[in-house]
Image (tube, rainbow, N blue to C red; front, side, top):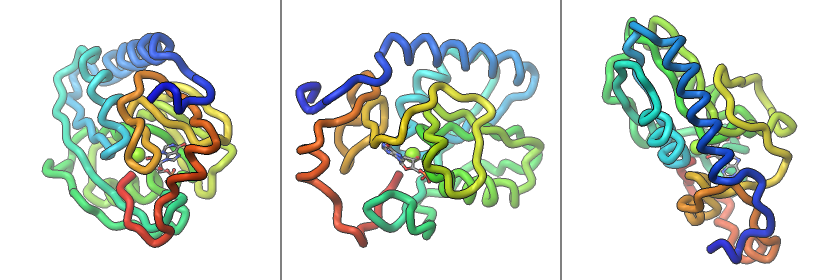
Length: 190
Ligand code: IMP
Ligand code: MG
């Protein structure tokens, strides 16, 4: 697997230190608040799993799964909820946990959807941010790292559903991206 990686952008050790730092900040901000953490499947599962083990607050955990049409995930801006929240978040403090903010479309529409359910507050924790790709306003209240405009994999992030299990964040060799694109009209979970 690692032989498919051209360059490591963020090491496992750097991620671990940053996740701990974010968790400490969230623990301070949400003391006595019992937040509902909402992981965005599939990409955020690793970040969420590591984050919650460093959180020192009473919390519950739920997941949503969105799908967007297109090879360039979310570029179409057409979303479908594949798995909705199981929690009624009305009057609750919601913390959305995302792997990466790219165009911002996923987060923008997810925030709209959750906001309509009248939570007491809503914030976003994202491991990665690619600000150069933004097409609509979206920002994280808690952010791990900014990354350049390159397609990254690892620590939950996939290319064609693979490489999620890499412990670091990296960029694949160009021949890998070239060989296995997904069909442009395929429905893809993020
Ligand atoms: P956005 O809607 O464009 O902000 O991005 C939504 C989703 O696309 C993210 O939650 C990721 O799952 C996926 N994504 C965006 N950029 C990358 C990347 O560089 N690698 C892997 N997945 C990505
Ligand atoms: Mg995602």
